[in-house]
Each structure stands twice: as structure tokens, then as C-alpha cells.
Amino acid sequence: MILKYQFTKSNIYYPIDYSKVSAKEYIQFLIDCVILADCSKLENIISNGLKKATK
Image (spheres, rainbow, N blue to C red):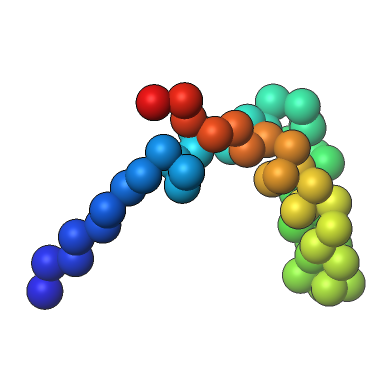
């Protein structure tokens, strides 16, 4: 089965920018998310790193 997706300007984002967080912090946030069920720091990284595409 072939799936076709229709993209519009409103749902296209650039890849997430992880440059503002160190690898050690990122891994700790992942651990917190899985073990402590606290994904707030990870969600913050993702939402701060998302940028909408302009084209």
C-alpha cells in the first residue's frame, strides 16, 4: 500500500535544533522521561527547537 501525504505550509518544520542542550543533559532528560514519567524538560527542548519552514 502506498501512502500519499499532502503537505501544506502550516505543517512543515525544520529538523529540531538540539544545539542548545548538551548530550549529557539530553540523555538525563530522556531517563527522567522514561523512569520518572517527567517529560517536561524533554518537551521543552523539542518545542524550543522547532522552527516552521517558511516555504
